[in-house]
Length: 501
Image (tube, rainbow, N blue to C red; front, side):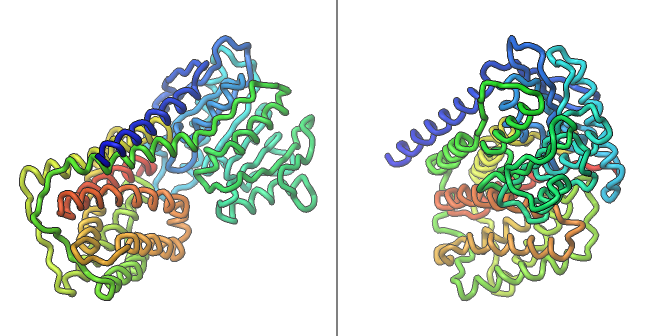
């Protein structure tokens, strides 16, 4: 009875979240197109007069879906908004130009892509000839450089800005938005850029300079959010809309798309639904399998890989895949998993792959499908690209070679009739700390992992719940291990940027 009640509540949460998220685009004409290989989406208010154009660019490892709140907010307020996928990102099948370390080629390709999309957008019906650009993180530098090179860009909105090209007069009318919980190097950069005009201490939400001569500058902090959350903050949307309304002397409907609560409700419902669905899995073992180690024996096996893995991978060559940072993560997962397995071996623990018959395969495929599609399809629709294109199918299999050792060893370590309480959460904390150490040892190579680590932790938490529920029903830790390994391999292979060689 409890399972039925939870399932009903979960389905209600999912449907409510979906309804509100879909309703945000009401009154808009949304058209998808291609500019060369670049997927482009045009958001146009129905029946509106010609309006300014805003080209919106996503950041590293993102896609145009990530910028949906800005596009909906601006379009619902009468602007013509255009989003797109950079090369190597989202559904764009073309890799980003240049080798993995060739920043000059990357930047040139990003700028050329932005230029091509902007030229396409300016030819669309419904634009009045005025132009603004908006970019997040990696793209903040791109839109700033584009606006400097094209003085007819009348406003620039840089979210999570890091762009040394900014001067006191270029780009024109620059708004900087940061999340209050972002790394200090980003918030300091926003303060520095606005200080070029302020000529003194920079106060938040104070406009310096002049809109008339294009020197207007403003810095805003979105409270309580970090590098990704800043995109979903109502405060961020409000600041961007107000800034563009001032530049273009417009007054819109005032609509603000703040999808955070509805996304939270949607995914909370999907996660909760996993519990009653897990009760439908087959029972695979008469008694729970797993190492079942108590704290005294478990903690050394959990801690040592966290210390040794970043030291081992520090000097290893990790540029063997055409996805930036994905190859390092594959190596980190693999080394961590092998070290954990060796720890179990020396502790006298042996793996037993019991019940590996047809029902075992059914259970693994069922959990993996829920992990990937029940969570992944809404992510692809409302958050970021999650469906593979082109050669990314092969990358999933390659990434599986890294994630599989980790999840098999970790699940076996943390499951069992006498396993340490909270041991599963402890091993995830150790993994998080090992990634942090890896970044500290090699910041030039791994800097963007600072941004990705929180997302990895969220996935570990969600998939950890699914594997826990699957284990309680099936009593075999390998079900969750194989399903989670496939889900993580999928997530990394489809979201990290594809690079040229």
